Length: 101
Image (cartoon, rainbow, N blue to C red; front, side, top):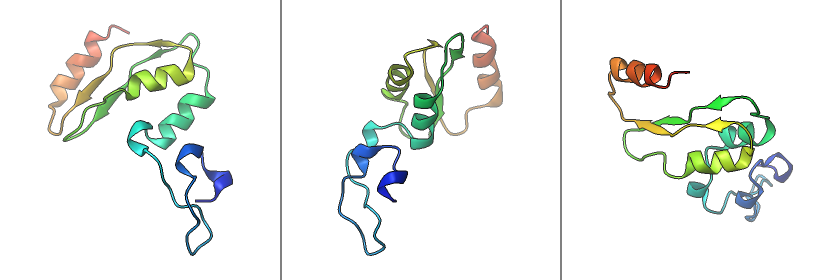
């Protein structure tokens, strides 16, 4: 990854590899997925309701939703949730309906 292309500079501090690109270092587990972080940091969520959720067979959403809300500083953020693998569609539909958006 070229330094100038790195959207998460704290992860691009490492030495360069043979290809001349920076090796990723740092604590990626403390950073929400990069595309989502970039999306959250460059958009204005004023007047929007944001419903964070994740799908995972193992780990939960952790503090990612709170971190994303902090990055944006705008919008109304509702409680986050995690859907495990094999979550029935009916359960997801019921969750969406319960949001009353």
